Length: 247
Image 1 (cartoon, rainbow, N blue to C red):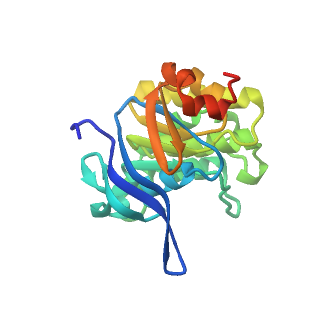
Image 2 (image 1 turned 180 degrees about the vertical axis):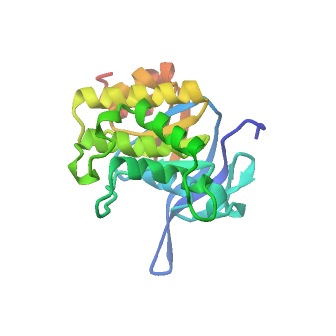
Image 3 (image 1 turned 90 degrees about the vertical axis):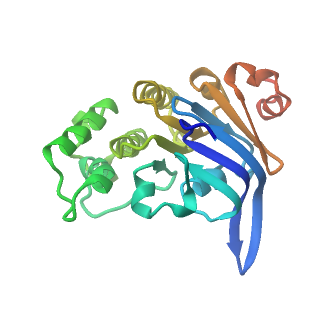
């Protein structure tokens, strides 16, 4: 693992435990990701894309092998330390009574606050910058329940940006969005990745958008993964199978 690596997975096996049984979804995974990588994760439903992302951030246990985050073992990181290294945007919508878009984005700064979770001027500035970057200035005081799907996803991404983590994970953030909103989200993530030198990993079935905006493609099939440059994806057999030969 190089000193600059955001993620290193060595012989990783990922899945979940059910009724005292260990269900293995991905096996013997080797993966290394660097700052500035914008990686699109592709695969059929049930192939293990979500399992991989949830395991990297600690939401699912690592069944075996090693996962290093910024040169430190995942199992050695406290929840607070992990929240400063990884942010994740899931498909599930968060709920909250009278919770506004501003409140949700502000939550991204909580790992950096003091004992009383008080937001200081510098932290408020970071929150405002995240809101503006995601085009939410006119929607900041709207309740989450009032936001369209596209605005809600932008709010969650703004929260992730405000969290100031070197690694951002997103699980199908463009699901149920219209065509223009999908492009806007992928372009936003590309700009964040480049301007802030983050490692951004996004799973999606929008193969054309991954080819257009991501610089690498991580293909998930048969419990294993293959990472290649985006420009080589259309010539790879796994990608051809996923696209049906239409890309």
